Image (tube, rainbow, N blue to C red; front, side, top):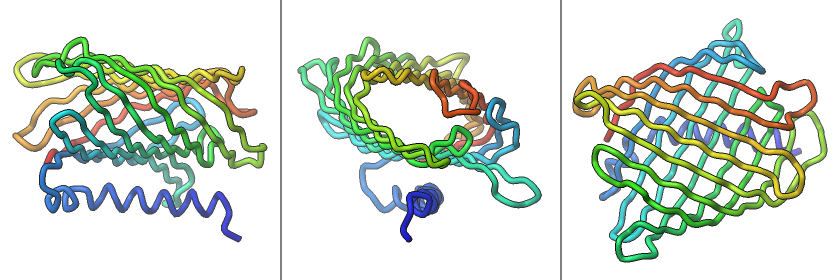
Length: 246
């Protein structure tokens, strides 16, 4: 039978293959830029296992719009056997709606899987509007609000859940020291049907080792106000690694 678990395993394989092939994909596609990072993280919360992290994105910027594909995978092994995993994939596009390029519309589809939190597959398409407060080389800040429809399948056999959600996003990036940068991504997703809320915060410090290679340290917090039975509300991860830009 072609089950949701089979779909999740296939998606994991496809996403990992995409991330590994990312530099070759971008080099063959004119006008695209991106990065891929590999690191090690120590998780606390629903799991306390050591994990390998692979993350990357590609982006194409047009005159008044952009398109981005982004993905990440965290995998944990015990006794050389894969026992836990967490991944997410995002396709998004923004379109300027004023001459100054401050206001923009946003469209995206987020797909994620979290073995730690009992999530087999969660799919969230959304559409909204955002505003750039700052968009300079040394400092960036934007906010975004959107509406979406979330569909969740659980690993433990809990009935699937569907419902309307809101999405609030904040992105901030600042150059510090001579070339190092610190960035903060915050996403808040409250249910509009009484299903609690989720918050994800990703803080990243990057420092260049050479023109196309950075040292990267991430601190990631995932909070769910109404987790599955027996699961903790908050997971945290510290990921240290290197990031190659192309």
